[in-house]
Length: 427
Length: 139
Image (cartoon, rainbow over all chains, first blue to last red; front, side, top):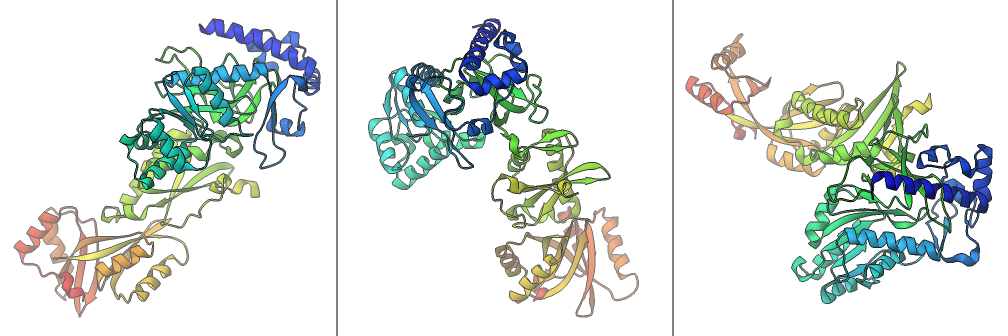
């Protein structure tokens, strides 16, 4: 499908979905009325910027069924997202929703090269979490044999992988590593299993993890992205290029916004990912703020798919700092620190304001085994700091002062916010 | 000709120096000489001590950023100009000195220096018959 055809389709669907929620969800109707909008104001996909955003809080405030658009007797399944900080989010799916979801999931698996000749085990949790059943339906639609392994009893799962000749697996990347460890413990070698495709998602992962998983399990690992508020796994997927995840944008329209100004960002820039469901009946969302930070990759994919790709998730907008007007994410600093083996994988960002100018200091720990005789002059250490500062500058677009700390002196973090000391708030 | 030197990365915050010295005390290591090259944020603490290899292992086990390197240690004649004469020999040979310090050992002045051109330094010291210290002299 050409880009123009896609945009036309998206525009038509957007108009329909706005009209649908306007008439079926009081929450959206009053939001639109407050902004003096009617469904007729939304005609093309470009009109989407007129619409209000929806947040996780809106979903919680309307617990359990406040944002549901379809009548209860049309709902054939209910999932719930984890509610660690309040009410869980309840998502109801109509029969058609499950059909769309299944098809999107089948697209993902097909992009990974899964066919009816494969045997695929699904090791996402089956239950309220969307991962298990979502992946399960997709595997069945492709026509491969699905093994609903779910999580837990990993040794049994490893034996099944070996004995059944399982060729594909859907799970979290950390579970894939755990599988590899379990195989080692059981004395099962890579050449005794036949895994060739892995669909990994539900948590962020790095290229280093991909390399390790691929090496240890002897498969090609592909990212799968999704969130229950929008659908579940299958919102986007990597193709054979393993470079960016194609979004099923005929169903889930993506935008990238500045998380502070809420203005759409130009193509290619990093910001918060926002989704509008274009076809959902059970619980459609308009401009749902995912809090995930990424960019949409410009240009065509060599695989031939024309649907837009998203970059890996860099972090969460909740953690974002604004330093000298530039958005800075602790995860960016983390990626730089992790890329230099001289430093331990720990860091602290200290933000301050000196003479009305924001300053950023990045504290890193020298790794004990990298402090060698060649580093025994201040000049040599200075050079190492400068190398890190140059890398930080190229990634963050602002200057940061590196402070080297002795091994073990940076406090072990308890959660993400523990990576930041923002002294500006104290003044 | 060379002796082992411990180099320790220390932060400029109260207690860090004491922490290193306390660890040496616990390990029953005696310091013979030391110097600190400092910047605004951290210091490079250089130590000549007894049993340097054991000291290195024990400090490392204590989690301290410590490195073991070899530095040249030359004996000085006890009169004015003793250091000047030795350094002149080195500079005439075109040997760049990265850093230098001196201490007294048994009444003799000892000049410690590091150079990146270790081969040339060895040749020059041998050719000129300069007196030097060895690891066994540290006890």
